[in-house]
Length: 85
Image (tube, rainbow, N blue to C red; front, side, top):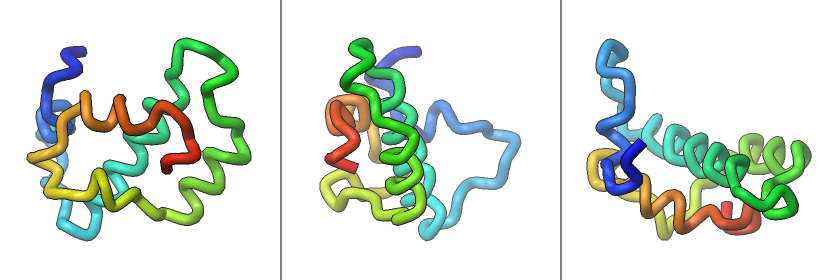
């Protein structure tokens, strides 16, 4: 996957485009996914941290913008630690 792609480019086109209130949840899910894919296992979140991030459903304001403007690189860079989520 090309990290310079936009998040919108990797979403399944067969599914209806997300509403603006759903975009935040999609961005949060991708942030958590990237955090779980860190090369160093110690940098990956615990299941408790993942659960808390998804339960709070609070997406960092630094990354909140229309989904067609969000690049995968932005999400990858931002989520180096789950504490940012």
